[in-house]
Structures are given as C-alpha cells and as structure tokens.
Image 1 (cartoon, one colour):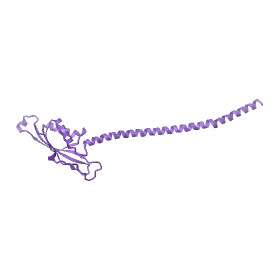
Image 2 (cartoon, rainbow, N blue to C red):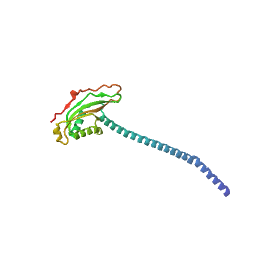
Image 3 (cartoon, rainbow, N blue to C red):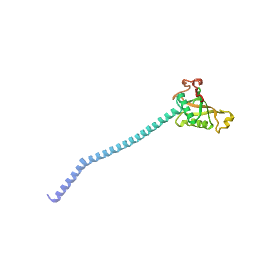
Image 4 (tube, rainbow, N blue to C red):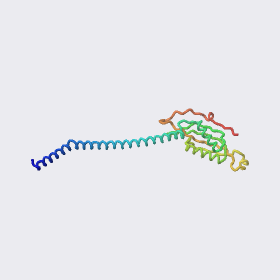
Length: 214
C-alpha cells in the first residue's frame, strides 16, 4: 500500500471517528446543556416571581399592621359603646391639667344620627375657673382626639362671674361660672342597619357626678 493510499485511509478514519464522536457524544451533551440552561432560566423566573410575591406579602402584612393600629386608634376615638365612666375620668384629667374646679358632669341620653354611622352622647359640664383656665380646658378637650382619646366637640358655652363685681374687678382673672354642652361620639357597630339596639341608657339624674366645691 502506497503512502498516498495510507494517508487517505487514515484521513477517512479520522473523519469517521469525528462524525461518530459528534453524533454519539457531543450532540447529546449539547442537548443536555441546552436543557439544563432552559431549566435554570425557568427556575430563575420562578425565583423572581416568588421574590415579587414575597415582597407583596410583606407589604400587605405591614399594611395590615398599620390598619390594625389605626383601627385601635379609631376604637379609642369613637368606641362602639358609650363607656361613660372612662370618658368622665378623661374629662376629669383634663380639668386637673387645666386648673378648673368641676361642680358636676351630667351625661345625657345618646341621640341617633340619620345614616351617619354614629350616635351623639351629650354631656352637661358645670365648673369654675378663670378665662385662661377655661380656654385651656376647651383646647385640651378638642385636642384629646390626637392622643388618641375620645373625639369631643363643644356645642354650647355659657359664662358668668362666679363672684361679685367688686371682688372680680380686684382680680386680673376673675373666677367664672361656666356651663358647657359637650358632645362625645359613639360609633354604630359594624354591619348595623336601620335602627340599632341601644345600649343600656343612664338618665342624667342617675349618672350625675358631683364634686363639692371646697
């Protein structure tokens, strides 16, 4: 066999081996690599989607916490029951801070409001104090909602001198006799429609809280 024929045979063998290697080894390996890359891309897409859902869930949970805190605040601002004893204590604290002297606090009967979702609880307040003390008390009462505390609104205000004119003139800030009609608000229970069963009412004569002037 001549050298030329030998080289052709060797070249043909090399080509055959290369073709066999390609079809039986490299081609399946390339397919496996392509499949693996496709699976990696799918998993990355799923991971990204899962991260987005997780971020949304975290945002929803945080919003739920804020809403829950807000609901607790609203329950203090406008409770679903009158809670007269605690309301009287809050008003008494305001009086102590303002320096006025209470004579009496008389809660009235709560009043329905048409389709507004709340009731009005009137309070008749009688006390003595200087003009500045009265002004401070009213300001504190209307700002109590920022505490948060009960939502209060002053409806009527009557002022008069608690002392004789000569005694009052001798003072820079004379003592005043004050009568205030103040409104507290009570939320209707969620889902209540039409007329709602009233909680146990207390008449003014039964709930008057009096403080004897020293």
